[in-house]
Image 1 (cartoon, helix red, strand yellow):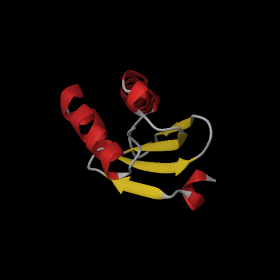
Image 2 (tube, rainbow, N blue to C red; image 1 turned 180 degrees about the horizontal axis):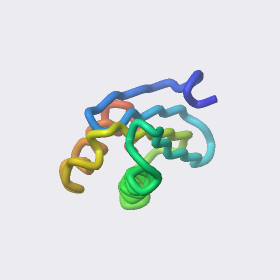
Image 3 (cartoon, rainbow, N blue to C red; image 1 turned 90 degrees about the vertical axis):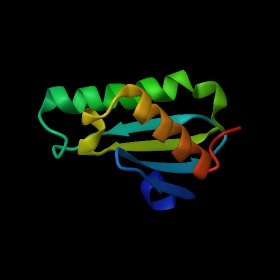
Image 4 (cartoon, helix red, strand yellow; image 1 turned 30 degrees about the vertical axis):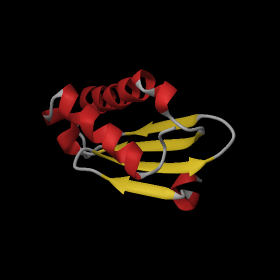
Length: 95
């Protein structure tokens, strides 16, 4: 539902962010088989989840879907965090 009705979408080299304003927080993390085997997919989702939890106090209420891309696992945590915050800013998801 958020894919089709998202108000903002932002593509980065490491993930795609879909955002839709709503009255509560809803979040989904997606990693397809393009990322790799189950270990790699779970690691990608854990990284995205860590960014979300670390910055939850900065976020507007809404529905979020983060779709991992294969390059996510080859970058450092700080680089992906910087990209994550930039994507949130571009989607007007920061308070």
